[in-house]
Image (tube, rainbow, N blue to C red; front, side, top):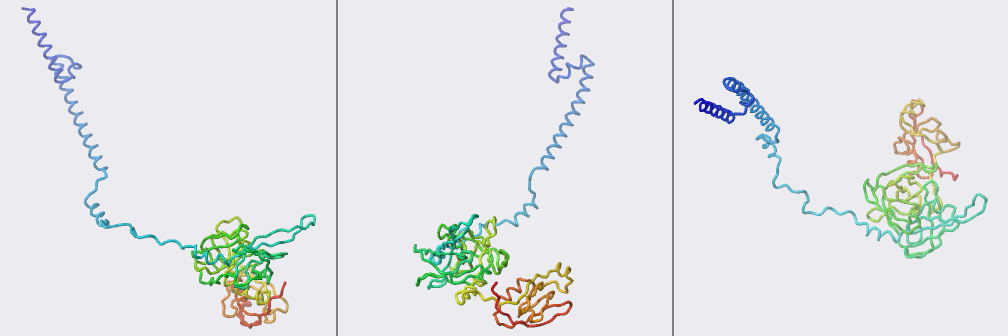
Amino acid sequence: MHSVSLAMRLNRTKTKSRLLCINGCLYFFAGKGRNATISMARMSKKCIIAIVVLVALALGIGIWALSCSPTSNTSQSDGLTQYTDPDWTFPFDNESATPLPDFRPVVAEVMPSVVSITTEIVVSDFFGRQYTEYVAGSGIFIDDEGYIATNNHVVEDAQNIYVELVDGRTLLANTVGTDSLSDLAVIKIDATDLPYAYWGNSNSLILGEWVLAIGNALGEGIIVTQGIVSRLNVSMNVEGNILYGLIQTTAAINPGNSGGPLVNMAGEVIGITSVKIVASEVEGMGFAMSSDEAKPIIEDIIRYGHVTYPWLGVALSTVDPSLAATENLSVDEGALIVELVADSPAEVAGLRVGDVIIRFADKEIDNVTDLVQAIRSSQVGQNVEIVFVRGDDTIRTSARLVERPIS
């Protein structure tokens, strides 16, 4: 009986252990009997608290994740809707873009009037021995009788000048006249019925306008480059001489281009290019003497063999606020007389060193460039009114311009 009772108690104990194992694993760490019940109760409370904390944490994370998600609300949707357009398409989606200018007809029109120039120049070496150098340049027929406009530095001091036409003929040319101040020259070949270029109006040019430079670049024959007008009415000091009315262009101008034409899209000559005034080591910056500046000079060379410049007989400096303060002048614009040639039109008119010319003929004078251009646009023998400032006084006088002496 004792053995049976003991077995039954053991069985009950095992059953209780199994029940405890089934209900939770905490029993194995809490002991047996009443102590086990108390331990389990305590652990159950802790478990409940842990579960509550975990649930609360999970809910918190879920709410945070939802708040961070890129969901749109009704107000945002309404705000976006008012800017949408279901019928929108790209502008000109079914239309072709405006094509760039076609340079081919311009080249075909102008090319026959452009010539390659080669000059022979005799030079001496360090030991005084003479030899011949050949210089390449360009030119443009300006009529059908053989007159060719080019640069002075292309033909200056040349022993012989050879002109090659686009049809392959090479002819000897003679110098009609040159002008070092403008770096222009005119030569002539003995031929007629020649193709010549139309002369355009450079005053009508606008920034950004397409232009072509045509010439004997690098002595390789007639080459065409394209660009735009990037600046107008440029003044530049070239070897101590100021050139006015220049056109700046992005068209490539290389050695050999000098004397060739700069033409617009109508095939009109609006400038004579010059590598002499190309900014060295700078790309996309070429210059040409404007057609409006070149035209009267070329006319004078053909008519008289030289250029007749009106002359006042003064050396000048541009007045600005800094110079006005330094020289104690009463005006801060104008052309200050710094030298005066004896018996010149300026001296005869009563002008003195230190006077500031502020008006010449009908033109306001703000700087030296204004005055030089005003003088050059006048005629030899013309009487012009001059307004100048001396001290605090504004005075009027007149001067009769004479031909500039040949230096």
